[in-house]
Length: 340
Image (cartoon, rainbow, N blue to C red; front, side):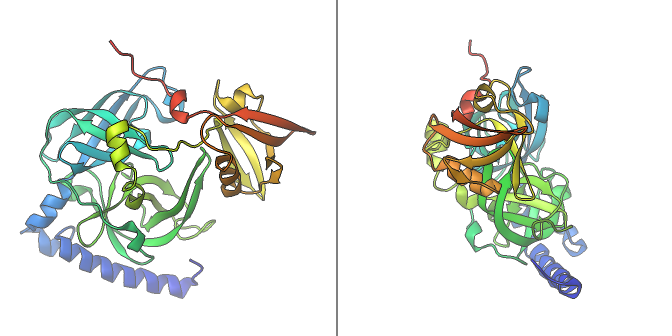
């Protein structure tokens, strides 16, 4: 945000005052509200559930994410729970636990790599009132919010938005306007970002070291804006996917001093089959130079949908090579649960 120390302190004080007002409005987190919790706040928090996933032993994502995963989800319809996709991708079994402790099996109803959302379908009803979807576009810096993980009021943390900006992840992922909050919350995966009206504004994705601005020393969390769900929700429910599907190359890329280094190549993925290796430096896409992850992704995705050939120029050792990568739909790379 570019503020000096005094500005940061002022922001902190003002933010905390507004957070206190938010807490009073929702009846959460303050001693004055502990004796008589408001019905509205209890109903709001009843939508936040625990998600447990058992992952296929041979899952592509097992090495990086493990074969047992646990986080949070949010009931958005009577039988649908929204979570962050990496918790449940390649799962052979999923359970959703309500605030009352009831465990219900669920299936992966939909997954969207572009946003990162995963949508679960419950096989039986659970206690809880679905949380309405808010308007995350209206969320601005300094706005107070509540971060809710499973566990009722014990899972509530009060925070405020410290930046709205683009986010580029090394795993071929980018958001145009991610939500960054402070202070950091540890149980962030799939957590609900709730506004003063008690509506859902985002889903927890990451803990980051630079929430206020790139390169700053300001730990916090990154949330996926709920507005990204609205145009794709019906497709996720009906088809399990939302299109068009972006091309995926199967590599992780790190940005350092204006250069893009290949940090990892997915085994048997498109980049690996094309001969790309860890340590390669990406020079251009289709003859256009790239110096940031955002540049790289935009130029790759502009080539077309999944399946398109992506021409790259890379520096391998001392040699500059032209490499053509046959992209795929990323979901095709994941392992599927065996069918009987």
